[in-house]
Amino acid sequence: MKTCKTGIKKVRDVSEATTLVLDWFERHNKPATPQSLADALGSRVAKPLLQKILEQLHAEEKLHVKDMKKMRFYYLRVLPLSDANGATTTEQHSELEDDAAATTGERGDAVGAPEVCGGAETCAESPADTHAALLHAVAISAVQLSERSRRLTRWRGWPSSTERAAKYADLAREVCELRNSLERLQSRHAGESAEAHSGGSWTSRVRRAVCRYRRARRHWVQRKDWAMCLLEATAGDAHTPVQAAALLGCTTDAEAGVSFEDTAVALPAPLLRELSLSQR
Image 1 (tube, one colour):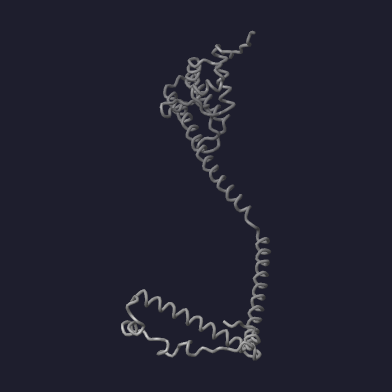
Image 2: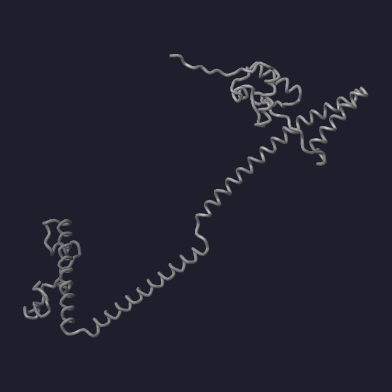
């Protein structure tokens, strides 16, 4: 089985290759090295021939050269749009160069030649500087435009003044409702507390008194247990309560008059049933 081989048609004619190179620079209008230009042309022109054509175009002042970091860049020579006074167009500039060349050729003036060359050097340097300045300005404008685009995207995500006003009104209404509900609950609780303390029945008052008494007794028993545990942990079993009182300055509940054992009240069972309380 035979395979179909496709090859790249090489351009060996110098004039055709020169036209191809100039056409590429005019269409793309960007700097290129010999290697990058050869790649862009698809290796249709050999690199030695391409290097020779680039040098010839540079000698003919159709291309400019810029050496950067051991690399030589070629870019298209563009005539300035205006002179220093801003009044000379590209066509006028070319006409002036033609007139100067004609005058130099007719008169053979040796003094005029350096001036023309000096103008050519100025024209050769001025577009490069202008191009670099324009690139710098474009880069700055691109950064500023990107930053403004990010800000605009962020601002578009924020709610508008109308939406913020509507949201504020809804939140203010909810806060007002919560405050009114809180005030109603507080007033209801205050009324219930006043009614419980002032207008309660005899049964409720006795029941509250019994509950408070039992709570106090339970706290007293708990406090006594804690005190005994502390004494046992501190003095051990070698000291009696009297010795502990003499040693640590502790007094008994009976001496302090707060003993709930001596003052315990045993309520009758019918009363506890009436109060809905248990025996303990």
